[in-house]
Image (tube, rainbow, N blue to C red):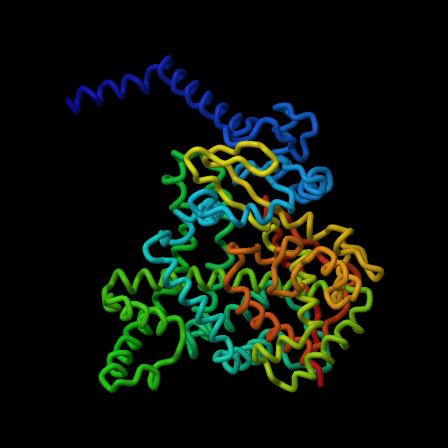
Length: 538
């Protein structure tokens, strides 16, 4: 039987007619896939809705808009917001990578947030955007939420317990990365430096000393953080049948970095397990063990009756460590890179630096959450950076998981598998809300969120207080509602501690022109490779 099949196969691949037939089947498959991906409604989009970037609505116009969306989504977001959202209408936002989306007007925010996860799923959107079956080391499900929530809770609610360590690591990393020369300017590639600094400070919280300063560990954890989204985009562009084949190949680099992380972290798990047993035998659960990520997951396992010695448990938690490091380091590094470039390129950069520095000085060396809450100008500068340069340009996006689909408030029916959301980029540049006498909405104004004019607009729209961690339909730097990032409170302290120390101890050389942020699909990246000059203050 096997020999017969082999003979038939050999005849097929040596027969010109068979080869032509195979080639035609492949060609038709490619054409069909390209048509579905680029030109069609993808069977998930109501055909009655207008398309941003495709005013005529025909297949060719849709195809052109879909192709432009990969590098030109910025203008489509602005056009869609001004033409449709501000008039209370929904529209289709082309998205070549993740699939076209139905964008609701901001007036539908309450309705969107009220929908249960069983109808509109944030988790499913995140899974698809991250291509989570391949880029999260196989961690989807498997108790991920419980331990992830525990880590974020410890990092956010217990932030004051980490402040001294974060300050110490910030000071040490800045000295080594930005230098101590008080005479000459020191030029650095800003994003690379901030990525390493954030990797060390976050590492101090997650794995502690001395590992957070180990060059090999820091390099592996930051390399892992850097290269997650690009492979995800590539995999999403593939036909479904190719994803299981090429997905593991594309993410091999991430796996190499994880193996390097594991080589340093595994011995720590062994040591902490011994320490935990010693603590339990002495009825003391805190005296000998630090309160970092490794200890949290060990105690979480014990609390749920699990065996932390189980090899699978240890491997899973080391993978979780890599993913949590990615979520904390990458976004923070991009945000602080953007903030420093924003400050350096401001027309009155030196005056802005002095005003922020003066405010930070009033904190008198206190970096606890209560003290940071009084730094309104520093908070405004960071909020303004996130308003203009947030990594994700969609405030809230959910996937329809209800089998029968859902009817949106503007009357259209979106079937199962479609995406429904509200984009943040348009509202963030809305002149009617953010424009002030001092600066238009499209210009960086570090003190915009302290302006009385903006406070008056906020009261008129019943919007909550605007601040770095306070989200609303007008400010979605961390998404909004239940979808809002739970790690934003940790990010708030982390960014203010690091930026505050840079302002206190370094002068930033003014820039004539700010480096541009590259757009790729629906993400706005940092100015990779752009340089800046700093000098240690006397």
